[in-house]
Amino acid sequence: MMMSEEWITIIESAEELTQMVLSSETVNGYRKAHDAVYSDAELVKTIREFTEMKERYEEVQRFGRYHPDYHIVMKNIRVQKRELDLNERVAELRLAENDVQYILDEIGSILAKSVSDSVKVPAGSAFFTDSSCGSGCGTGGSCSCSA
Image (tube, rainbow, N blue to C red; front, side, top):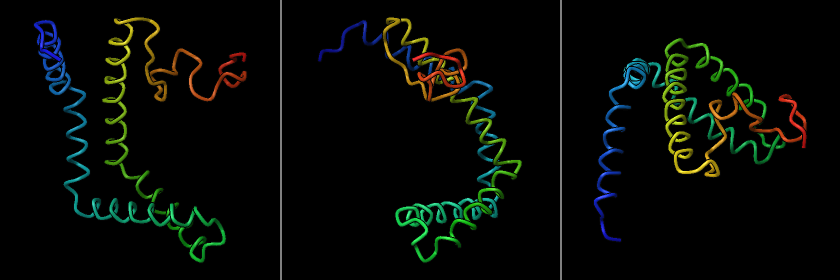
C-alpha cells in the first residue's frame, strides 16, 4: 500500500492525540499511582506471591475439589486477594486504571461513530454499558431489555 497524503495526515493526528492522552492529568495520575505501588518492595513481593498463587489456583480449578491442594489454595487465594484489595495504593491504582480505560473507550467510541453508527465497538466496559443494555442482557435482565 502506498502512503498517501491522507494517511500521513491521519498518522500525524493520531500521534498528536496520543501525546494529548499521555500528557493528560488522568494518565499522570495513573503513573503516580503505578509508581506508588511498584516502588514499594514489600507490596511488589505481595503482588508477585499473589500472581504465583493465581497460577496455582488455575491449576487447581482444572481438577476442582479433587485436587489435593484444593482447600489450601482456595483459602490462600482469598486471603491474598483480600489483602491486596484492602491496600490503599492498590485501590488507587485500580481506580486510575479505570479512569485511563474510560478515556480510551470514549476515544474509541468517538472514532467509531465518526466513521459510521454501524461500526461495532467493544461493549465490555462500564463506558459502553452505562446508558445501554450492555453485557449479560437481552433476556430482560436488570436493565429491563426484552429479548
